[in-house]
Image 1: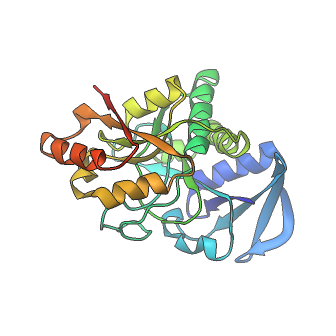
Image 2: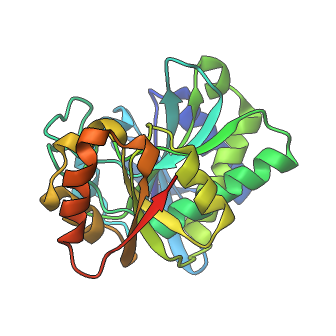
Length: 274
């Protein structure tokens, strides 16, 4: 079973979920979750359930107490100070001790890298086809929940104007369903370095066969150790064959220690993006 989750506190998530129900003919079932109806659809011979929750998505650590999906997709809003219109995808979880925004300290969710790439590719395609004036981007691994099932966020941002943009919500709906239905398998890398939205990693994923799993941003590198990097590798659905470094997006004082740490991990290829 695959699970799609949207929050009633999140207008973008509700809009995206409604577009999924509308375009993919999800049917309301006799089941309910916390007094809200569960919707269902069979996709590629797999059951897909869609549920609405009353909690913010980042505070749904409880969700796998009730559902045991093979893939969990949150459709949600994205907020940023810049307000740049953005369609994005990422895996949740906390790379460091801080767990201010849900989840568990120093625990990341399992990353479905190929499904995320399929969602990203669909966003980029629909941006062109429908002339959406939006950026398309990977985000780094961040916020809760920290789950033991493959989990991704497919998001619409970055301000209320975009959250209420039904054309963009429809694009995110199609992206979420592409991630669910295509069942692709891509060579997968962990990305390290650069900003929260990494344009370099996004460009690589859109232009080559490579998919990115967990992404560790520049600001978190000094707090990430060998154990966390191994967790990023282990908690990815696909075999991680390489680490791709945004070399200019790594502080000078972090470079030597990072390379030494990565070199101590067997069978891991390092690639440098200038």
